[in-house]
Length: 303
Length: 279
Image 1 (cartoon, rainbow over the protein chains, first blue to last red):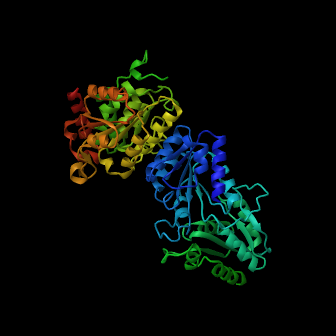
Image 2 (cartoon, one colour):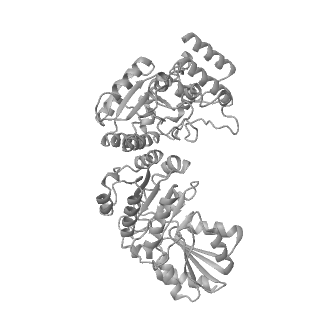
Image 3 (cartoon, helix red, strand yellow):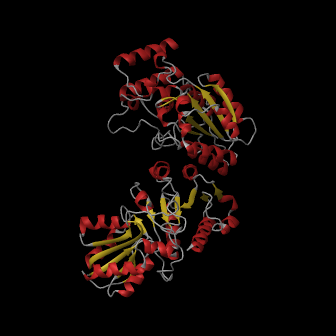
């Protein structure tokens, strides 16, 4: 996924001389290819995220198309007000790339773990919020974000969970992505981000469960969502993010007005990480590991 | 290349401070709004910039090659409105209908108003945007200059110092930061809240060419801007403008109540009379 990020960024910059990359002193080796190809368009803004985002707004006003890179704990959470006032207020073309979302920095603790970013950025008017599941969705999301010339938050989670797409077909980021068809009148899982790989593993264990990936949280593909609600008895949402205000909340809000049906929201409960450990350890601590999730979905599916 | 107002033949934009202050009073009275003192301290600064330094199009406040006037201390926005009225970007209806339901002009700088560049008032935002604009102008090789007015109280905000560091690092010699050192912030005297000491020395230490002037002396402002922009260094520029909050109406001067107080019929008339006496 990181290779796809680098490759796609270089390709976009090759084609569009207005693209700049700003980083808050993060992404040490990630930008080697970009720096080699476009050294004059790489701006290390230093460890000063608020100023970086404000500068991106100024550069966008002068005709540039900045990609702003940071850890998602900082971009968008730390700089939420800069995003709201300086960028989103005029829908300036700035792509805010928040890397390491979720429990990626599992050993570093609360400061670098980012489980609140979707809930923070979703209410900002007009923001596009993209959350790709694998490298193919990431590439499509970056191209869409660049082409849209709007204010975008691109959420990048755990990079090594594997693919959910085979890469053969072009992906329309704006649409819900059917990864696995299920039984009519059964359970449909909607997952956003790399946790979609877990959703696929769950569906292999439970007969008839459909799996959809949601690369665009905002705008949300309400049209396809309506068809899923019509053909399903139950929905499960999965996100590596708190369940309050995040993707599960979005699905519950959307369903409640037009297609009320039981929804199991799987995500992080109202708690910080207690302990340190591997990424897989933290998923277990928060009940987001395959065994726990599969058991929850199976019980919900059987109810 | 655009011209400055005073070089433009056949036009007359005097930006007379007493007239600008009268517009501020009219707006504040019509809108029953506050922040009069915040606007009065930057009247001469705005007047000199619009009269003699900012290159703009009278007919298009968003002309792409304009110089940029970033009001980081958004609370002083009535001073900028007053200049915009001189140019014709806002009309008497906007002045007399200030704060009417459904009107465009807000109580703080708002980027959706043609003629204003940033949405500010949440402090510590504008300078970073100005730095991005100055960097963008340099990358575009457009020759545009960026002027940013920052309040002394606003310098409590961390991003101001982040922006200062980066501006020097990037050699933004097309950026002029003007600090409105009126000595007050919302709750009292700056030196009693979070004192700043010698502001020019701080800017110098951060890599700027900095001077301190009387912020109500139009000639001194003019000289400072001209000489800094022509000094040939690759450093960003800073002008520490020593000002008086509420300047121009003696009963408002150095009285922080005019950060908050609305004009009555009596104080409105008294302020107008005081302005005439100053003239």
